[in-house]
Image (cartoon, rainbow, N blue to C red):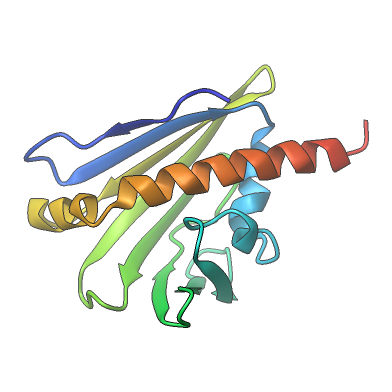
Length: 162
């Protein structure tokens, strides 16, 4: 694993996250598209994740709910654009508490010599939407998720037949 880089340039409606994993991209792709694996890595500690829907195909919908310790739910949902593959996932993303604020996630998995560079380019309609996303502590949640994802792919790598 190597450090995570978060780029959120002032005035640009975009956040770019880059992180390297010592795992093949197929394992990372599986972690993003397998409803049994998502709850094991997605979200900061203290929240549990329920996958309500996950249909990783062109036009397919995804929806999940994070629950806090008091049982309050936070629902996120979107659509897949193009067919998700171990090279790239393109999806919209919307938080139910901010209806109409939709952003685009382009996630790429670039593998070389067993190391995969994950790059998530999140594009917003407006700089204000991006700023709110950043100000609500997204970096904390993403850092926690990426560490948990790293732990998961290490575990999955050990399970894979040699």
